[in-house]
Image 1 (tube, rainbow, N blue to C red):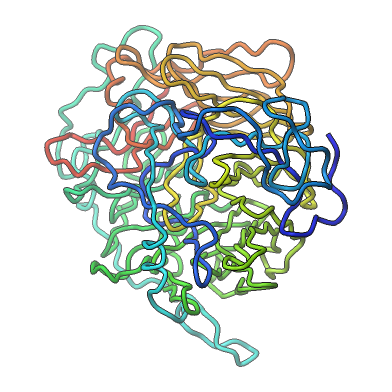
Image 2 (cartoon, rainbow, N blue to C red):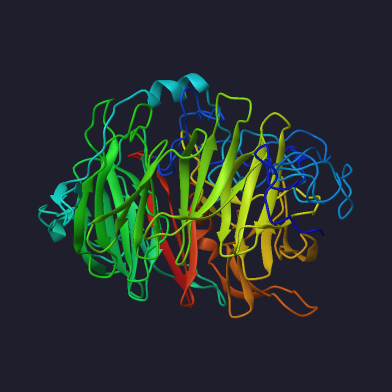
Length: 611
């Protein structure tokens, strides 16, 4: 596969990833679950966002099983169309329809071989979810959004501040103050936490009753806190060596990983939690955002740092709006090394995670380029901007920023019509793009220096599970996808029965190998560790889920069972709405990311399985 030139092509494009028409049940424009309290930087550039977001239906009510486990809806036809990264030309010859490995039509970054196969139409950026019953842990829902909704929300408010303090240079910059909220008492523990403590007394459920030989144990579980009848978000799940931490509605709970005993008193906020950092920092800290009030005009602008192991609160602050149309109604939080990046609809502000000291603002640059989304990892900070939204050269741009100074290390424009919807990995950088007009998608990979490396050339419908991206991109809102230095692992879409995981070579975008789910249910990647891909096989009506490991090298890729969850909990396991899952230290954790608010249900918040 040809490599991109040293300079990106003009006209807003950096290569020619191919685009493939979306198809029903594929991962092209995968669908996404209900908004997790607005984490993701709302899009929008004056006078209108580059890609009109779409508004999802009111979540939480159980839905009928969706077509496919990622179920991004897609139009029939696996044919390649012009892809995301630039006008035809620089990166290879236009690709031909459906020819995996053969040149296809121009893609998102210019004309390059194979790098996009846009599949599935679907509104941009909603990678899908797995099947498995009305409340499958990886179920997604279609979103229907109107530009009018975006405009209405983006016209709210002006200005920006965080708690002011002086600097040596005499300039006043946002400085976060220590929280003065009293620590909640132990009586705030959730009712029926599953270990006999808390206000509910001894728990009536014995989830290990009837457990069969060879099945794993429910090490502990937690019941969900009370939530409004309309439901509530329960975003995030973070696991450390000592503590499993979960946010739900207005609280953050910490449990000891082995016993499930409360690790510290729950942290209670005055209003609902609306955003969290999807990943924790190296020193086990996260940032939680909660609403400024309960009225319709309330914003997601209150910040609180939390230590996952101790439950101690760090600094707190308040995010105000930026310039006109730059609203903090919904914000995106991401941690990059020692930096917290707070994204608004058209800009972002970076803070020192330890002190709350403001580091820099990422504002409009170039020809009407407005930063609209950020993604952070241990060593990288990625920014996506919407440029010239109302002009003839409307396009997205990807930048890598220095997380301490905000300086752009490199900039890569994307071809007009293509939208950077998700990042599947930051190191190496793997991005998922959509083209709403062409009803196409593209997956592209990049070198450490930001040059186009390859595009996925596998003619397949994929279905990772991703959250709603309503007024924001939520670049890091996907799970069910894994990446190591050389390979991308994606689950295929299956409307019924077993699916497959496909290993894709990041050097050339071609398939290395694929493996079928060992059960008649969908299987999704969780993480790569020790040369093994760990995957989750979803439960069926008469069997619990499985955790399996698959060798990533060699010629044999047969799944080996690590855990077989008990059949007695299969129904509970299957009811986690858009569940978050993780495998850490030989234990499997699953938690709900959306509470139903149904008082008649003994709703579970989180379960831990082990041997």
